[in-house]
Length: 365
Image 1 (tube, rainbow, N blue to C red):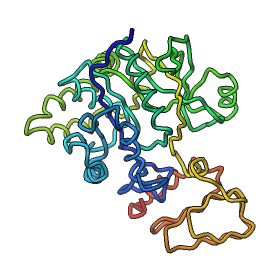
Image 2: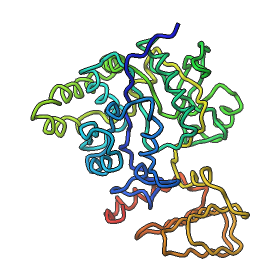
Image 3: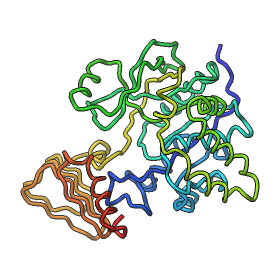
Image 4: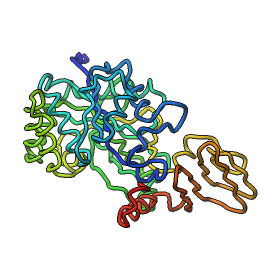
């Protein structure tokens, strides 16, 4: 017999910088606010996928303080007070912890989902089915942290992995397993072993849990972090909200939710994703999301190419990119910057951002 689900809420985490998507992703317009396909941004697509499962009034978005206005503009259906600006980025654990503390004020035993704002997932119907299955597991196991793992399609060195353990009874046709271990981003040979082994899933960073369970785990493993977000939550409906948030949030430990809780918790369940997933982590995502021409090029530009193969070419309207005798390059023009790199170095684009920051070129960030 399935336990009835009392309420469903969701946290959309929209605070990332998208540095591997430079130069299109900038400080004032990180990638979650960009449209990779069609007219809807990645953030809007994330909210769209939750439609019919979570009511707009029960969606919370945590983003950078500088992006609150843009978030409200892109998601006008969400109540403005449910868009929360972080004074400074502190990684995912403080973000989740704050959401849990705020939700626990009115519904500590409801289920809430945690979804990154910059993924491409389809079809949306299978995504919602997986979340419904995750919510059922959480209702039946109130202490459980439930995560979604994606069956790997290639040996990625850019994703973390989840090792499946003992199988559990599935829900809604979605497989469920105890989590045996979390694995960091591996070198290529190890990633190949993971794919061949069949026990490993990509860690998509999508979770279902109860606010009370998150806060209890924080008390056990990160008590200072819990104390900090509880102080913010206590001041939330008072005139001191902004000052308390500004004073306390920047002092919280900068740590991912995986390190802070997932790897320490004793009741973690992974569901096998029945949907297609891409975290749009770098420019090569365009190859996975778009068709190629007869020479293997992915073109989003007015492009003239001669003896050009396997390139990703992107430019704004009104600009023409011409290539001659080149292969396997990223050629990305946006605004006042042009990126040219070998495709094999795509994961290192963030080093350019770090160098620009180090040399004081903030006007290009």
